[in-house]
Length: 326
Image 1 (cartoon, one colour):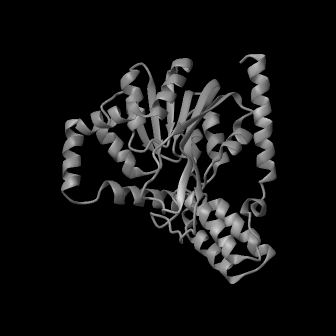
Image 2 (spheres, rainbow, N blue to C red):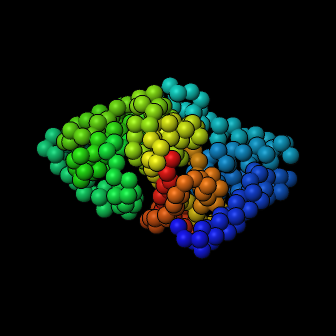
Image 3 (tube, rainbow, N blue to C red):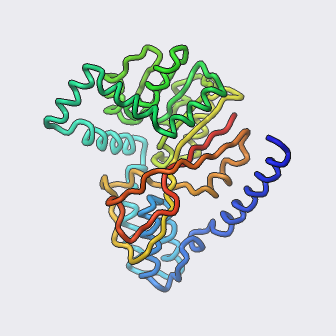
């Protein structure tokens, strides 16, 4: 990085960190008078639709601490009920697997067709073609070209699409996928056609128990950190198994939109807060911008027409691709 670019980066980072510091407290982020319950509830609902569940909980509890109100207590209790799966390791695994078992193995003709396509390898080919076109995967491939890893970790591998696509394109690379849902691991095993790709059940925050320290050249985690019980523990575990000079890449949602009118009540799609946090650009710079060879790329995505109420319109919607070296 040239001196001019470094200076520009530091200036941008300082501005972003200053903004983050000014808005770091839940009351400051609330932007409403705690004595105005309707305004507070609207602000909390906005965060809930952003899938910033933890942030919404902090805001309503901060308002309640300043101005106790039955509406705040009720809202806090509701939000906490959506986070009970984070209370223990076992509860988290159970909730995740129940969700994917319900989604993946729903009985009917489509399930029969899916199993036939899996058996014939058609689903694997289709999945890999789709993953190969994803901008997030293309960003990951650029990291692969730079690092030239021999061993790669997919922390939160889902059905294994990204891992298999890497394994197919780089036959000399060993790819290990770790996935919380046993249902997804089972599906990945049926889809996998590559000897250099392996899948096991486990938590992203416990990969240090499955792999030797410094044994991984490149680790990535796509659409995982917004789910996990503890972000710091998850990253600490991944960095333990990453070798010095190795590269860590992750993708998290970019959810920035504005409300144009009253926000309706919110309830999580799966009955619990599967996505429990959201990351802003400022927070990502503040939290990871000091890391070696840090990079952040914004990847535009399709606005969720019909999935969010009409009172919302997008500002920036898609994902962040973040990478840095150990």
